[in-house]
Image (cartoon, rainbow, N blue to C red; front, side, top):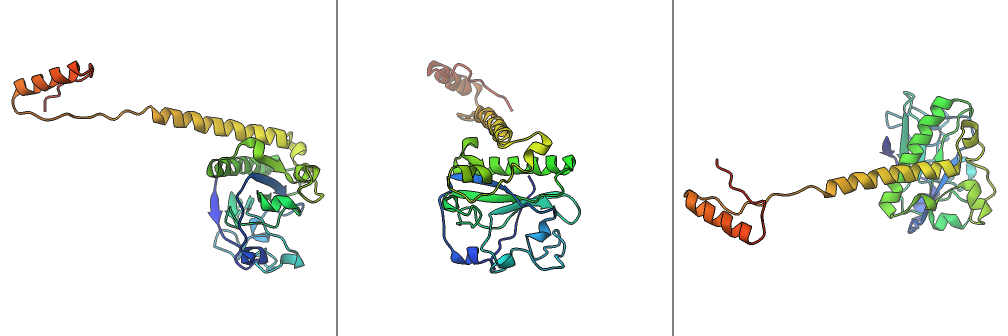
Amino acid sequence: MNLRKLILTENACYKAGKKITPKGIMVHSTGANNPYLRRYVGPDDGLLGVNQYNNHWNQDRPDGKQVCVHAFIGKLKDGSIATYQTLPWDHRGWHAGGSANDTHIGFEICEDGLTDASYFNAVYKEAVELCVYLCKLYNLTEKDIIGHYEGYQRGIASNHGDPKNWFPKHGKSMDTFRADVKSLLSEGAKSGETEKKKYYRVQIGAYSVKANAEAQLAKAKKAGFTDAFIKYD
Protein backbone atom coordinates (compact mmCIF):
# COMPACT_ATOMS: atom_id res chain seq x y z
CA MET A 1 0.00 0.00 0.00
CA ASN A 2 1.22 3.47 -0.94
CA LEU A 3 -0.32 5.45 1.94
CA ARG A 4 0.13 9.22 2.12
CA LYS A 5 -1.61 11.95 4.08
CA LEU A 6 -3.14 15.28 3.15
CA ILE A 7 -5.85 16.20 5.65
CA LEU A 8 -8.67 18.32 4.19
CA THR A 9 -8.44 20.97 6.89
CA GLU A 10 -10.52 23.52 4.96
CA ASN A 11 -13.49 21.16 4.60
CA ALA A 12 -16.44 21.97 6.88
CA CYS A 13 -16.50 18.31 7.95
CA TYR A 14 -13.00 18.56 9.37
CA LYS A 15 -13.82 21.89 11.00
CA ALA A 16 -16.84 20.30 12.72
CA GLY A 17 -14.33 18.32 14.80
CA LYS A 18 -16.61 15.42 15.72
CA LYS A 19 -15.08 12.04 16.61
CA ILE A 20 -16.25 8.42 16.30
CA THR A 21 -15.17 5.02 17.50
CA PRO A 22 -14.76 3.15 14.19
CA LYS A 23 -16.85 -0.02 14.08
CA GLY A 24 -16.70 -0.67 10.37
CA ILE A 25 -15.42 0.40 6.96
CA MET A 26 -17.53 1.58 4.01
CA VAL A 27 -16.20 1.27 0.45
CA HIS A 28 -17.26 3.92 -2.07
CA SER A 29 -16.39 4.67 -5.67
CA THR A 30 -16.66 8.18 -7.08
CA GLY A 31 -19.11 7.66 -9.94
CA ALA A 32 -17.12 9.94 -12.26
CA ASN A 33 -14.67 9.14 -15.03
CA ASN A 34 -11.56 10.70 -13.51
CA PRO A 35 -8.99 8.39 -11.89
CA TYR A 36 -6.66 11.18 -10.77
CA LEU A 37 -6.44 11.96 -7.08
CA ARG A 38 -5.90 15.68 -7.75
CA ARG A 39 -9.60 15.95 -8.66
CA TYR A 40 -10.46 15.37 -4.99
CA VAL A 41 -7.27 15.90 -2.96
CA GLY A 42 -5.41 19.19 -2.88
CA PRO A 43 -3.56 21.40 -3.02
CA ASP A 44 -0.74 19.84 -5.03
CA ASP A 45 1.96 18.34 -2.84
CA GLY A 46 4.30 17.75 -5.77
CA LEU A 47 2.99 14.24 -6.37
CA LEU A 48 -0.69 14.88 -7.02
CA GLY A 49 -0.34 17.43 -9.80
CA VAL A 50 -2.21 20.71 -10.14
CA ASN A 51 -6.01 20.74 -10.28
CA GLN A 52 -6.55 23.49 -12.84
CA TYR A 53 -10.21 23.89 -11.85
CA ASN A 54 -9.40 24.07 -8.13
CA ASN A 55 -12.49 21.95 -7.40
CA HIS A 56 -10.81 19.52 -5.00
CA TRP A 57 -12.44 18.78 -1.65
CA ASN A 58 -10.08 20.81 0.53
CA GLN A 59 -12.58 23.64 0.77
CA ASP A 60 -15.57 24.39 2.97
CA ARG A 61 -18.29 22.75 0.85
CA PRO A 62 -16.87 21.29 -2.36
CA ASP A 63 -19.30 21.75 -5.25
CA GLY A 64 -21.66 23.24 -2.66
CA LYS A 65 -22.06 19.87 -0.91
CA GLN A 66 -21.42 18.67 2.61
CA VAL A 67 -19.12 15.78 1.70
CA CYS A 68 -15.87 14.40 3.05
CA VAL A 69 -14.31 10.93 3.28
CA HIS A 70 -11.38 9.56 5.23
CA ALA A 71 -9.34 8.59 2.17
CA PHE A 72 -9.14 8.44 -1.62
CA ILE A 73 -7.46 5.82 -3.81
CA GLY A 74 -6.42 6.69 -7.35
CA LYS A 75 -3.65 7.93 -9.63
CA LEU A 76 -0.86 10.36 -8.91
CA LYS A 77 0.27 12.65 -11.72
CA ASP A 78 2.87 10.05 -12.82
CA GLY A 79 0.16 7.40 -13.17
CA SER A 80 1.15 5.36 -10.12
CA ILE A 81 -1.47 4.33 -7.56
CA ALA A 82 -1.67 5.78 -4.06
CA THR A 83 -3.97 6.14 -1.08
CA TYR A 84 -4.36 9.59 0.47
CA GLN A 85 -5.72 9.84 3.99
CA THR A 86 -7.86 12.98 4.03
CA LEU A 87 -9.39 12.86 7.53
CA PRO A 88 -8.15 11.42 10.83
CA TRP A 89 -9.47 7.86 10.93
CA ASP A 90 -11.51 8.53 14.07
CA HIS A 91 -13.06 11.73 12.68
CA ARG A 92 -16.77 11.68 11.84
CA GLY A 93 -16.93 11.81 8.05
CA TRP A 94 -19.70 12.92 5.69
CA HIS A 95 -19.73 9.99 3.29
CA ALA A 96 -22.66 7.67 3.99
CA GLY A 97 -25.65 9.98 3.99
CA GLY A 98 -26.95 8.12 7.04
CA SER A 99 -26.07 6.83 10.48
CA ALA A 100 -23.01 4.97 9.16
CA ASN A 101 -21.24 8.33 9.43
CA ASP A 102 -21.29 7.71 13.19
CA THR A 103 -19.68 4.28 12.98
CA HIS A 104 -17.80 3.75 9.71
CA ILE A 105 -14.57 4.90 8.14
CA GLY A 106 -15.36 5.72 4.51
CA PHE A 107 -13.03 5.88 1.52
CA GLU A 108 -13.51 6.53 -2.19
CA ILE A 109 -11.89 4.69 -5.08
CA CYS A 110 -11.53 7.03 -8.05
CA GLU A 111 -13.39 5.56 -11.01
CA ASP A 112 -12.19 5.67 -14.60
CA GLY A 113 -14.21 4.52 -17.61
CA LEU A 114 -14.75 1.21 -15.75
CA THR A 115 -13.19 -0.90 -18.55
CA ASP A 116 -9.45 -0.72 -17.77
CA ALA A 117 -8.65 -4.01 -16.02
CA SER A 118 -5.09 -2.95 -15.19
CA TYR A 119 -6.24 0.16 -13.35
CA PHE A 120 -9.06 -1.67 -11.62
CA ASN A 121 -6.79 -4.45 -10.37
CA ALA A 122 -4.30 -1.91 -9.02
CA VAL A 123 -6.84 0.16 -7.07
CA TYR A 124 -8.70 -2.96 -5.90
CA LYS A 125 -5.45 -4.33 -4.45
CA GLU A 126 -4.73 -0.97 -2.82
CA ALA A 127 -8.22 -0.92 -1.30
CA VAL A 128 -7.82 -4.43 0.11
CA GLU A 129 -4.51 -3.45 1.70
CA LEU A 130 -6.03 -0.27 3.14
CA CYS A 131 -8.83 -2.29 4.74
CA VAL A 132 -6.34 -4.76 6.20
CA TYR A 133 -4.40 -1.83 7.68
CA LEU A 134 -7.57 -0.35 9.19
CA CYS A 135 -8.78 -3.71 10.49
CA LYS A 136 -5.53 -4.17 12.37
CA LEU A 137 -5.64 -0.59 13.63
CA TYR A 138 -9.18 -0.86 15.05
CA ASN A 139 -9.49 -4.59 15.76
CA LEU A 140 -12.00 -5.14 12.95
CA THR A 141 -12.53 -8.11 10.63
CA GLU A 142 -13.60 -8.50 7.02
CA LYS A 143 -17.16 -8.88 8.30
CA ASP A 144 -17.11 -5.22 9.31
CA ILE A 145 -16.56 -4.03 5.72
CA ILE A 146 -19.50 -3.02 3.50
CA GLY A 147 -20.08 -1.21 0.23
CA HIS A 148 -22.18 1.95 0.07
CA TYR A 149 -25.04 0.01 -1.56
CA GLU A 150 -24.98 -2.49 1.30
CA GLY A 151 -25.20 0.39 3.76
CA TYR A 152 -28.37 1.51 1.95
CA GLN A 153 -29.79 -2.00 2.17
CA ARG A 154 -29.20 -1.92 5.93
CA GLY A 155 -30.81 1.47 6.30
CA ILE A 156 -27.65 3.24 7.43
CA ALA A 157 -26.65 4.99 4.17
CA SER A 158 -28.19 6.88 1.27
CA ASN A 159 -29.40 5.23 -1.94
CA HIS A 160 -26.19 4.71 -3.92
CA GLY A 161 -25.08 1.67 -5.91
CA ASP A 162 -21.31 1.95 -5.52
CA PRO A 163 -19.12 0.02 -5.84
CA LYS A 164 -21.53 -2.57 -7.30
CA ASN A 165 -21.63 -0.55 -10.51
CA TRP A 166 -17.91 -1.28 -11.07
CA PHE A 167 -16.68 -4.41 -9.30
CA PRO A 168 -18.71 -7.00 -11.28
CA LYS A 169 -17.34 -5.65 -14.57
CA HIS A 170 -14.01 -7.16 -13.50
CA GLY A 171 -15.29 -10.33 -11.85
CA LYS A 172 -15.29 -8.91 -8.32
CA SER A 173 -17.90 -8.15 -5.67
CA MET A 174 -18.00 -7.04 -2.07
CA ASP A 175 -18.02 -10.73 -1.14
CA THR A 176 -14.76 -11.38 -3.02
CA PHE A 177 -13.37 -8.15 -1.57
CA ARG A 178 -14.09 -9.31 1.99
CA ALA A 179 -12.61 -12.70 1.19
CA ASP A 180 -9.42 -11.08 -0.09
CA VAL A 181 -9.16 -8.95 3.05
CA LYS A 182 -9.68 -12.04 5.21
CA SER A 183 -6.96 -13.90 3.31
CA LEU A 184 -4.44 -11.09 3.75
CA LEU A 185 -5.32 -10.74 7.43
CA SER A 186 -4.74 -14.48 7.87
CA GLU A 187 -1.35 -14.25 6.18
CA GLY A 188 -0.37 -11.49 8.58
CA ALA A 189 -1.52 -13.55 11.55
CA LYS A 190 0.59 -16.51 10.44
CA SER A 191 3.59 -14.24 10.01
CA GLY A 192 3.03 -12.90 13.51
CA GLU A 193 2.93 -16.43 14.94
CA THR A 194 6.27 -17.19 13.33
CA GLU A 195 7.78 -14.08 14.84
CA LYS A 196 6.58 -15.10 18.30
CA LYS A 197 8.69 -18.29 18.08
CA LYS A 198 11.96 -16.36 18.27
CA TYR A 199 14.19 -17.35 21.19
CA TYR A 200 16.44 -15.23 23.38
CA ARG A 201 19.57 -16.74 24.88
CA VAL A 202 20.56 -16.01 28.49
CA GLN A 203 24.19 -16.13 29.65
CA ILE A 204 24.69 -17.09 33.29
CA GLY A 205 28.24 -15.84 33.70
CA ALA A 206 31.86 -15.73 32.53
CA TYR A 207 34.70 -17.57 34.33
CA SER A 208 38.47 -17.47 33.98
CA VAL A 209 38.78 -20.89 35.69
CA LYS A 210 37.35 -23.79 33.69
CA ALA A 211 36.43 -25.80 36.79
CA ASN A 212 34.23 -22.96 38.02
CA ALA A 213 32.48 -22.80 34.66
CA GLU A 214 31.86 -26.56 34.71
CA ALA A 215 30.50 -26.36 38.23
CA GLN A 216 28.03 -23.65 37.19
CA LEU A 217 27.03 -25.69 34.14
CA ALA A 218 26.31 -28.68 36.37
CA LYS A 219 24.09 -26.52 38.60
CA ALA A 220 22.18 -25.22 35.58
CA LYS A 221 21.52 -28.69 34.22
CA LYS A 222 20.49 -29.94 37.64
CA ALA A 223 17.97 -27.07 37.75
CA GLY A 224 16.42 -28.37 34.53
CA PHE A 225 18.25 -26.40 31.86
CA THR A 226 19.40 -29.52 30.00
CA ASP A 227 20.42 -27.62 26.84
CA ALA A 228 22.89 -25.39 28.75
CA PHE A 229 26.44 -25.39 27.44
CA ILE A 230 29.87 -23.79 27.83
CA LYS A 231 31.18 -21.52 25.08
CA TYR A 232 34.93 -20.79 25.14
CA ASP A 233 36.11 -17.41 23.78
